[in-house]
Amino acid sequence: MQQPDRIISALNSVIDPLRVSRLLQVCDLAAVQKGIKLSIGLDFHEYVSITKATPTKGPTYPSFRPDRSPIKFGEGYWIIGVDNNNDVVLLEAARLFDLSHSNFAEHLQCLKAFYADPTVHAHPQDRCTCIAPSAEKMTGKVAYHGDRWVRKDFRRQGIPKIMAGIARGVSFAMWAPDFLCALVPRQRSDRGRVYGYAHYEPGALLQLIEEDIVDDDWLVWLTGEELKSLVDRQDVGWVIVASSFSQASSGRT
Image (cartoon, rainbow, N blue to C red; front, side, top):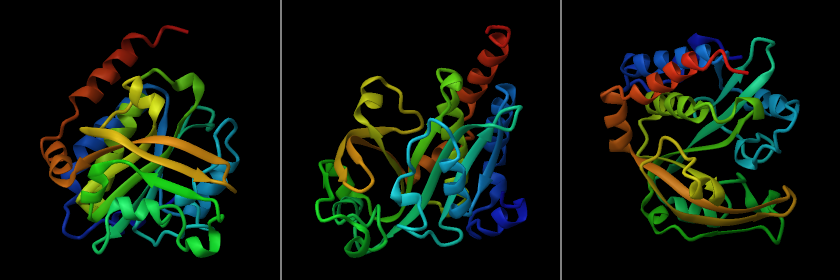
């Protein structure tokens, strides 16, 4: 794991980390009350080694694999949660795209959202068709979240809400992005199981042959101003509710 001083050194100097400290503390406490110890890492070689050794988790998307899409120090992080036996129960990754001269729709369709050099790594039949109109408006600093996984026995306990709170706080502190977004499976959107985002619309049709990935995803996102507003007002009530529910139901098996 990365040491706290290295993580702090990656924070954007314009942002005061204390602005998000309460949000992160409440989310961390909610996780502890569910028997989860959270950590944040910056080394994606380590992240991939963890994901490969985690049973039932699918392959890590190439967006977060250094062999396909290297991430510079300070331009990505990942979250891991372990139980009392030190076994992995949750994972998520995030990275920053500099789209000052492009937009998220173009970044998806040219496959640079997945491969640093599509001409080298992409299969000839790889395709990504962006069908989200709003993706064309996403420019500047775009924080992209993905690869979320929660172990089966910890699902339906409000864990995604805690993960969303951590991701909001860390992404704002590190980057103050113009947009924060993710691509999520259509079935999760249909079931209302997407937490932490204000907007969503049909997003992208993705086919990555060598990765054995065929997705029909929705695009979910927050604007930078919406993210800042959530962090500034320290909007943690929903995490506190989830934490209280966990305590009340902790006697169940």
